[in-house]
Length: 216
Length: 279
Image (cartoon, rainbow over all chains, first blue to last red):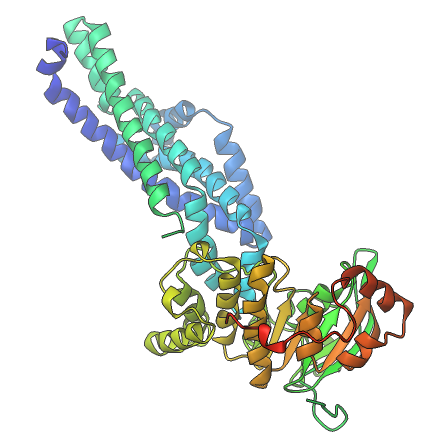
């Protein structure tokens, strides 16, 4: 069913998938941590933190990811910082998607009814405790659809990292094309792999949303 | 029970309290004293400031002038060494709130926690009560409001009346010295109102100090020691429930009663046993 050429190169492709998944998982974790922290600082922090977070979000969102990668790859070595492609790629992508994640979480935090705050306050709870036991657990659930959406964009964006010499899925695909002169079959196969990863993530997200709905 | 306000130190006292939302004055020079174990019911048209009055007692709303004390402690402010009045710290405010139970119109249970966790979380996280002890206390309270079999359910699977009873249990778990009820039956289907009022009536019998904002005139008449009628941010009339409702002095209270209590025939006794029958 699959073209012979995909089967014979499946080992290489799998290695590309592995690298893509590594990049994606690390970036999801780091960008979520950055995003949650930024969202909390933006919403509840001291005014100077708010300014810093706003600046970060607007600047990073307004610049193409590719440009940030170039900057890291070509620009940073001039200032004596030379990051290997993998940590460098993860760093740039985490900073970039952290800005999007912070908006995802901020929207969820702000969507939480004020009444929940009233209830927590009336029990004598203070801000840090309210955040930990009332706001964040609910905001994480509320943010699920937008979070999954951002993760999907993130996974597909890892293909841009091939530009700085990381042999993730897209890079591996291009290498095979150069060797085999069968761009159509190979690129279609690569696209199918991306689709399957993202589609399973959407299904997983749906399932998780259903499972964590509040009713028993 | 009749209470002689002059001889008992009040649980709650308002002295000349005013509050503004922007330019609109929502509380006008409120003075009011609630004795320990007294049940005060506040009635009045929407927008009359009843809810604001209640929320000021635990600083969910801030007031600007006058003072409110709970058990002798001023709410929201303290007097500094130089005699000036300064805002209390968040810590002090939270500590004061922990001893005042508040029940909301829209229940406001935590939807991501079971009933048991909703009731136990305050004692555990705020009062630092050991988890097992807190859960024992919580189960006991949940049983007292008639929901022993729902302890492990999530709030969304409960009816409004059940949720509101859980909310009362949650407030009681903090062992408050004062309970505030803000139109707690207004969001309920009519057939669910009595089960909540029944719990409140029992609480009143047990000697809890309560300020109750409500439209339930039958409850006011049966349970209140005193009724306060508010309109346009001011207390217009107050007094003994039976007398006040039977013989309102002000035209505003008469108008309010005509509008809100058409079903409530004056002096028509309703079987008091029907209140709280389901609880």
